[in-house]
Image (cartoon, rainbow, N blue to C red; front, side):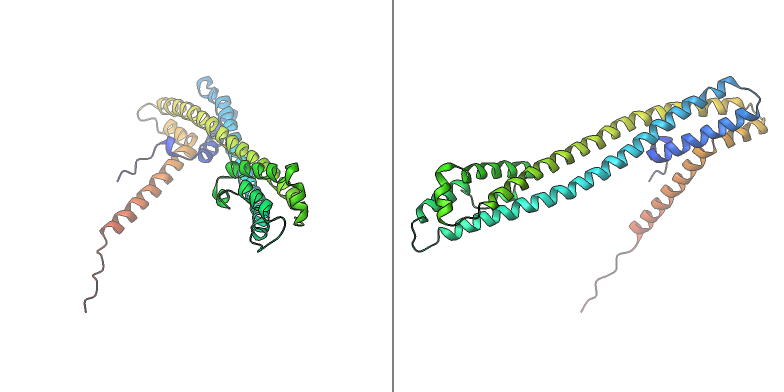
Length: 262
C-alpha cells in the first residue's frame, strides 16, 4: 500500500496553518535582510491565501453548526405535526366506530376524505408530509364540515395547533436547506482557495529550492527553515500513513483462530 504524501492531501485547516506559518517565516527573513524581491513577493500572496482558507474553514464550520441546529428544529417541529395529526385521525376514527349516532356517516365521509390511507403519510419526507397535512387542514376547515365537527365536540384548537406546527416545520426545513447550501458554498470556494494554495506554495517551494546551489549548506538550511511548516507537516502525514499501512498489513496477516471441534 502506498504511503506517498503530497501537499494536496493535507486538510484545508492544515493548509491554512502552514500558509500562515510560512508567511511569518518570510516576514521575519525580510525584516533581517538582505532584500530579495523575488522571495519577498510571496509574502502578500501567502497572506491573501491564508485569509481565504481561514474564511472558508470557519465558514464551513459555522454553516455545519447551523445546519445541525436547524436539523434539531426540523425534528422537533415534525414531531409536533405527527402528534397533532395522530390526535385528529384517532378522534375521527373513534367517532366512526360508534354503534349509532346522528353524525357517524358524516364523520366517516370526513375521515375518508382527510385520511384515505390512514397515517401512511407520516412516513413520507417532511415536504411531502407537510403538503398532505395542508390538504387535510383544508378539508377540516371546509364550511360544509363545521356542523359535523361541532356535533361531535371536535376540539377545533387541534386544527390551529396542527396548522402552526406545519408552518414551523416548513420554515425549519427551508432554513436547514439554506444552511446546507451555505456549507456547500464554502466547500466549493474552499476548493478554489486550496487550488490557489497549491499553486502559491508549489511556486515558492521551487524558488526556495533553486536558491541554493550545490554545496551551499547555509542557503539549503535557510530554505529548509523557511519551508519547515510544510515539510514537517508532510513528514508527519507520511509517518501516520505508514503506521496505518503497517497496522492494516499486520491485521490482514493475522491467522484466523480455528473453530473448536467437539
